[in-house]
Length: 360
Image (cartoon, rainbow, N blue to C red; front, side):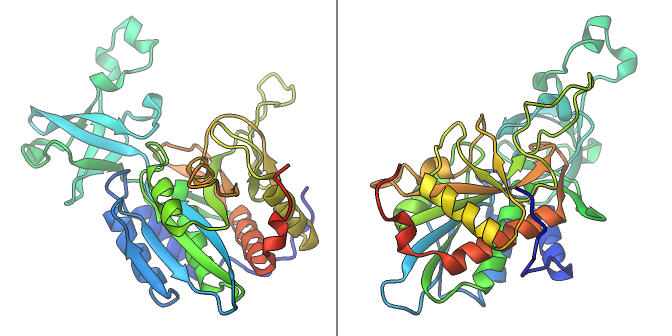
């Protein structure tokens, strides 16, 4: 499933600058205003309609120019995992809770920015010099950590303020390192696809909120748009390390370098097989690298899309990445490029006929 790519579209400086701007912006679930305003400005020149709904989703429409144009929804969530301040302990130290599914093992010593002022801070805990033997051999609990803004940060943060990782975007060859590649890769993809929307479809682009805490924005957006089919564009964990014992890794979901991951099934969705077959055919016809995301846990906004109204035929397509839901992720530019090419070609070829007949 990895033919030599014959790319119609190349990721260049403009696309990488866009991804850098999106990842460096903050948008923890429930506080997506900064990232939403960046995207709104980026799509304004290509959209026929733009609105923000009651949940905070950014809904963008590019009208088709043919009668009875098929309504295709593309979804990418804007939010990222992060933290919320819940109490001040004094001297610039603050208790916090997670927002979204983070990994406590990764929190300590990570720089963060807090509140609308983006106050610089760090997640701290007891230093190794003072740790007991039991503490040395156990995972540090979130409850024993604090966000430390320093003495000058005393009283500057308040309950309910959000905190996001303060990691900055880095490119190294074919790799990019950044926070929130889940799912700013999807957002950047939708922005690019709006620029080249084919005339025979009604393109409905939903930049959604609160995916990381329950796919909430997607359900509202899909109800509003009520498309004939939907594709959730996301990032997915690449569990592709070699096993230390030398045996084959049979636990991978997908792999870096394998191209876009087309979902068959995850914790919340059995993808529409007609859309799986369609995307597979398009990949092979255009010699675009692709892989199937192995069935298992996790999920995307498709888990909400396919349950909306009378049921919307849905599938997920994701860019693989390592270290999801931590302060820094890694993804490959070539995988993102293949994802863009697959979706661009799919939009150009999609018709209502691919949904003819009952779902298998």
